[in-house]
Length: 595
Image 1 (cartoon, rainbow, N blue to C red):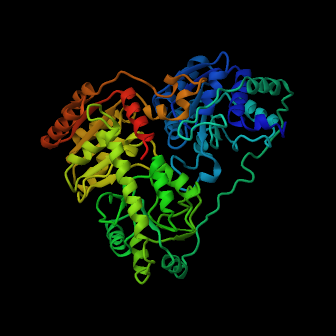
Image 2 (image 1 turned 45 degrees about the vertical axis):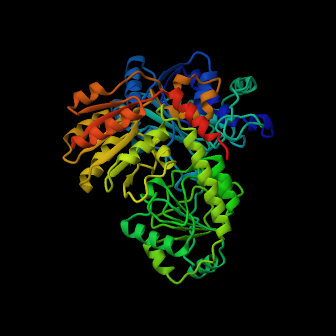
């Protein structure tokens, strides 16, 4: 078994199948599932299981209370299933109630692999022991692995299932690929394979084996996430810069206005191309020799690869771009020198590619590098990079019709009309990625705020209101419909805020980012388990909280409605309705276009 290559390639689905089967042996057959991506192996197991009841739940907080009521009536636990990040934290209120009232519940959270915990990876936090003393037992498993005894796994699950006087927690991390995919598949359209019949049969054979209940094993043994930070070596940095010919500046969240000013000075002095993350607040403001507009497109990755940077200097951390941490840094375009400058504590490098880390603010680093003299840039390479992106932007513009509302068109409209020196709060999922793919009008300073630490979609409205009140400037909060449904009660905060907040909700009838991921075509997971399609509109919600309501169904209406909301002068709710199918078609046309 330890050398079974087939099972080794399907461990992400085998373990959940085994866990579901073991819980079934204890009579636990009801699951409360909230949508996500990291938990798709669990959903795949449920799709392959027999005689289980799956109840889909939009909001993890509501899911937990729903499971609490179920357990009180049924006298046995239901199983909560969620993705990584803040999702499981939303179970906490109901778990505290269950702990106090001695009601059995099982919270099963998916997690990112241990090497990404504490490394500034997106949607990742330390989930082990998350609920502390408010659960009777916690099981922190490693990533599915044949070296972990199956008998030990089954014994631990059996032990948790026997708890009847309160909640328990199972935390299970998964490495990518989350689901099995064919060996030959398009890089942008990895089509997952269903849970193989052989995996289910293997699980049945393993379940039939004796289950020694006294077997115990430390599931966390051997895991260690050490810091990769190095001591500042300014002499070495100077040598790297002096030898550079094809430098690239990358800006994440710099931290302060002083940092932004220091970065602007570097841009003027070094004459390097620059990429500014949407949350940097510097998109369109740097007057760089060339600004890379985005990374998350196959052609963009190709252009940067052709430029072949020999050194990347990164100010700040927590970039939205997945391609930056993926193919740009790890896919064969690795620069010999990746220098990161950040005062944020801990390892902030999910790609594990940083060569030199300077633990300081951008302004401090620039001051220390004041005498550094980068080599003469290769203008021919920069010109080629610029011409490639210019052609790509033109092609993307042609592939983004104005008569069909889409996320990139919405981002462009907001950027065009939002007044300078105001605040844009960009929600997570599709929204922040749409803004990251658009260059705002040059010279228009805008504060851009995001919750991109663990990237939860809950609490977005409340965050926007708190930010607006603290800085005293009007804020346009753009978020998805699922985010607003998570935080609907915070419309009361917006309505009462003395500083206007224009809550702009993009209503595409569900969590449509999953339409663009492999889970969308996985045959063992029904689509409505993931997208949470709905027919909700938000006009009555606006009325409930006495907020002016505006609606846009096309591009011209969006311009008019947003203009009226700005003119109103107070908080308001703007609902943008778009077809998820049409939006997906625009995405596919854009992501597949070539120059």
